[in-house]
Structure formats: structure tokens, C-alpha cells
Length: 326
Image (tube, rainbow, N blue to C red; front, side, top):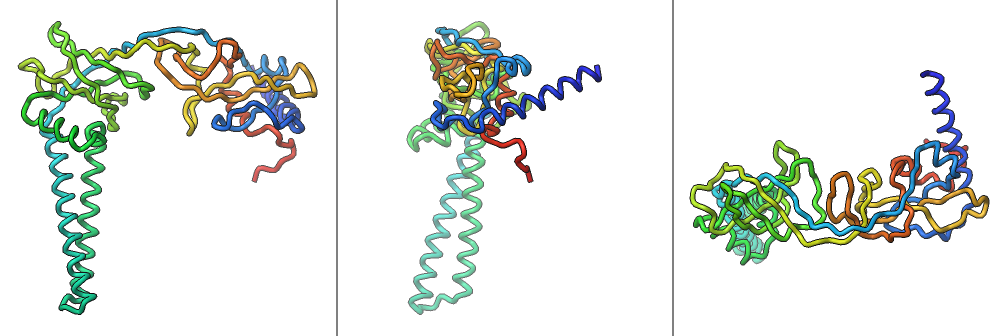
């Protein structure tokens, strides 16, 4: 086992050295998209096999997005409290700002407002402004989709929840942390009755399940369904067309999801060497062990295994083997 490990380590070292040298004089006019990241070294077929790189064409597919979720009916009094805190804090901050402007005008006009009074007003205004920012941030964390809504829509949602005309439900998506497209419909299964709801958006706060949560508004909910109740929820969207890729093929950086595919650029040194480029893709829907994606063509040769190796080699293209890493 030690001999096998040492041999593998030696192969990897030789591979990295050869790969970094092989692209030192490569052409610069490749087809790498600007948003996808750094260039990767050119690899021979033998090198690709050594590190387990496998390429394949993406599979075209059409999938209706149906997501099973678990709904938790939320306590609307928390929404009322958070919304009231924002309103009160903003009103207090505006009053303090007006008082500060009044004292500043009196002080500059020599009408009896002392510098000490002006400084005290400035401190009060700064304190109340911080409290307003905190209340707004708390509202956004707990009720992001409502906080982000237009003022009229926000007031209607709060008023309907306050008067009992609607319920707010958090739909948990177990095992998922991302959602590429908002569902169009939501159905709650309440004692066998399908109760429709409206998806408002993604909640920013996670729970003990550590899963993404959607805020669902349920108008005219059945009597007896109250805060704390848990019900099954089915989220559905339109049929989407795209290309299926294994989850292991998809990577993520600050620009979003991307994959590696074989480049059409030739290295000029050897026809056996292959160049790989990163291509940004859009995640449309999860499909078992695959992702339905957009941004590829059916004739693309995508890395479906070994993408992590190419990720580790990003940025090595063009580096000399004797570069010092300080």
C-alpha cells in the first residue's frame, strides 16, 4: 500500500510539472469565457486517465420541476412585532434627524443653541439611526421576501396576516441549500385537502435543518391550521428544457455555477494534448443525482468526472516549474 501511494504521489507530481510546462508557450487566443476563471494546463490523454478525468456529451432533457417540502406555519405576531420595530425605529430616527437640523440651524445662526446641545443631538441621532438599521436588518433576516416587496404589497401582506385572512408558511427543502428558479405554485396537503399558496421568495434565515426555506402565503387557510403546524408542501414550476449533468461535474465560484469542457483550441505542440476551459452554466433544477443546466450545447465535451482536479490546476497555466511561491 505504501508503494502504491508513493507511486501515485510521484505520478501526480510529474503530471503537475509536465502540465505547467506544456502550456508555457500556449496560444493566448483561447475560447475561455471571461466569467469562468483562470486557464487550466493542457493535458495528454495519459495524464487525463491518470487523474481520472472523464468527458461526455450533456444529455438534453425536459423536466417539470416538482419539489417536495415540509411546511411550518409561522406565528404572524412575530411579523407584526418586527414590522412595528422597523416603523417605530424609522420614525424615531426621522424625529431625531429633524431635531438635529433644527439645533444645527440655531447654532449656526447664533440663536441660543450651544455646541454641547448640538453634539448631544448628533449622538442621539446616530444611536437612533443604528437602532433603525438593526430593526431593518432583523426584518430582512426573518422576513426577507416581505421586506424586499414594494411598500404597498408589504403593507397588504402584513395586514392580511394580522387580520387572519392569510397564513405565512415556511417551506423547508430538506437536503438543499440552493434554488435556481422560484416555483410558480405551492400546494399544502392539509388532511388530504390540497390548499393553494403563493411563493413569496427565499428566506435568508436557516433553521436547525440547515436547509433552504421558502416563504409561502396561504390565503383563506382552513380553520384550525395555526402556528406551529407542520404539513407537506409540493412546489411546482413550469417544464424546463436543458442539459443533464452529474452533480460532480458542476463547480461554483463567485460568478456562479460552472463546468469544464474541452476547448477547440489546439496547443500547437502535440495533437495529443487537450485544453480545458471553464464555462458558466445556469442551474435549472435538481434531478436525482444530476443537475438540469442551461449554457451548453449537445456537442460540447464536458468533464463529468475529475472536475475537481482541473479546479486545483486552475491558474497554473503559463507558470514555470521553478516559480517561487512566497
